[in-house]
Image (cartoon, rainbow, N blue to C red; front, side):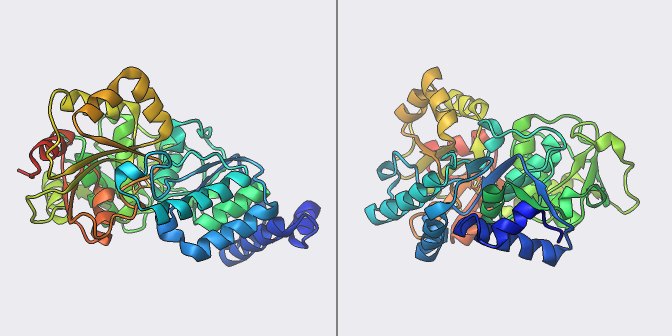
Length: 398
Ligand code: F3S
């Protein structure tokens, strides 16, 4: 790669340990992927925050970087392994909380915003169309590329951190326009009736597109929350972290549908539910908010749960950013949800909290949530918000 004088200085260690380490990571990546040089990024989203995934080795790595590392651009954090304030209420152990707090301390010393959400675009890390960013967390990366029209590869935790310390990332992959051309036409002939259908659609397109960039036609309308859910699902189940929906996402009008084509019919949506859902009726955990709930989703939950009580045999979690929760406090939604027996899980989520072995079954509106819950050895049910709230009240899926 061609490096500027400043980049060479960082690589030689003249600007400290963390700058050198970061440059080593970026240069190694650039060499592997044939980048000609580094490009500036306007923001970074760092994943790999939960102590559950990092362990002591990860914590040590972060502490090393925090000794002299300061981020150079707006940098936000993905969910941690617990609610940073109300972790006890979610059944997190003292030992885990102590370690997770050390992880957060390290990120704080680096100058990172302790946002702990996978929806940074809802809380102020909102790039402009065409801007280069370096984000990790697959659903956020897909949203940035597809819905916002920013440009980012799917970074890992270390490469995102390295980009934050240097303010640049290697220019390859989805930073280059020639790699952002749609590769497969997906004609949607299915009707999307309920919110979780977006997860089912993502499942189906992810499987059918198989690592090709989909150009989707036949979708008439989509709200931000629908797209948020679709982003999480489509990238989890298969395709690249970029798609176009004709007439809905930016740049879709620039392209013609590719020749290679597949269709999604109502039967495919039904098949997606069949594959995602397990045979289980007793539900031990209901978790809404994968990706993290927007304030609109929290309002919908409050409306549905008002005057009802969560079953004593189950837990009902609303996973969201602390920022959205503060808004929910002001608008009275928190009181409604908590007086029904629901719990807010701010700063964390069903995939990165240490839930393995605690719950045997989960219900959610999220296809991605089901995917990761199966990794946590839980049986899964995906359905509409109404179906999930009903399960929370009865303790059963019906
Ligand atoms: Fe976000 Fe966790 Fe789902 S990071 S997309 S809530 S698995």
